[in-house]
Image 1 (cartoon, helix red, strand yellow):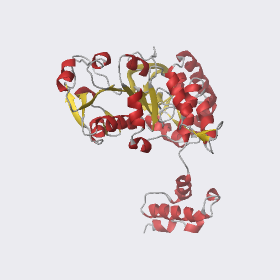
Image 2 (cartoon, rainbow, N blue to C red; image 1 turned 90 degrees about the vertical axis):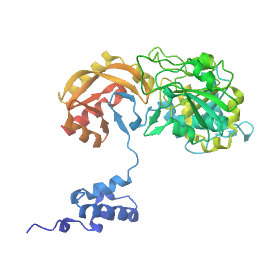
Image 3 (cartoon, one colour; image 1 turned 45 degrees about the horizontal axis):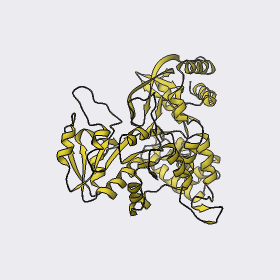
Image 4 (tube, rainbow, N blue to C red; image 1 turned 60 degrees about the vertical axis):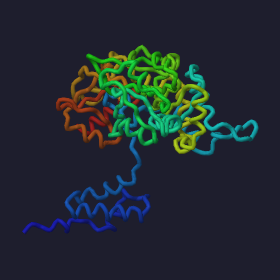
Length: 419
């Protein structure tokens, strides 16, 4: 007869006495151990892996090395923060002057450094405000300007923004009604004009940043919509503040405001390269109305975000900026050195990196990667440090575009340990 697998299940105290669990709260570890031992009894976990499974439950989010070639990888937290932003977060982690004027000892405008930095970066905006993400900025605009009224929007711009969240559902949740105009592929100025009336809260124009339409398509430019006599809100998506020659088709806040938009909404953790945040920029009266709305309190950002955001705008080039502009020849040099450092493993290959984060879907960035057997993908992800690449055609590609050069040796060591 086969041995009963339950005989191999270790005792709870044996698990807790393992040196790998030293330093963890014993009562909490006991709860975790019992849960993992139940998994062993169900055949879901090997008995020898219990201690590591318990330890893993105590670990916080792990930092990873992004070797995917996706600059703004949503699953990896989008933009990597600059050293200046990280230092600012550490400084703000304790008590901070987030709402205090140190000169007078009196209460001050919350987040004034971040707001002043944003206003200075987009002089075209009459006023600016920060919220906790891009969707929050749009929700506040819809609630404050169109609750119980209509938002006029092109059918071709009713996008899904990720993880199943769809723009129509998001806007409808605010109490506004959507007045859809045009068709999926073509919308004309006359479509908007016919839809306007006493119930119009505002016109919404959305940049469909995560897809691109070709062929028999047309849309109405911001300048034409700005002349229709109702507020115009433009969601530019990725947080580009000024034009960038590398991303010619990506709208930017300064240009859209000059074209006549009353409000611009966007994210702060994409092309801007900062922490997760939502940007509201535009007419001073509209921004102030939204800032004073009760919902704004629920959507405001914390002191750490304010500190990191200000440092992002006032500090040096961000990791996002550098990754987008990495020189392919320099990447080839680094990948070749990586292969050598990793004991000659893999093959140096040309590849293509992308912007990611729902931005610039048509932009391809020539890049270079180290191609390894696909079976190394999981061991590298689970290693220390965790190295995340991408698997294409049964090969694991490690693209160094988003990897700081000082991390190259760590990547090489990880490869050697897994090979």
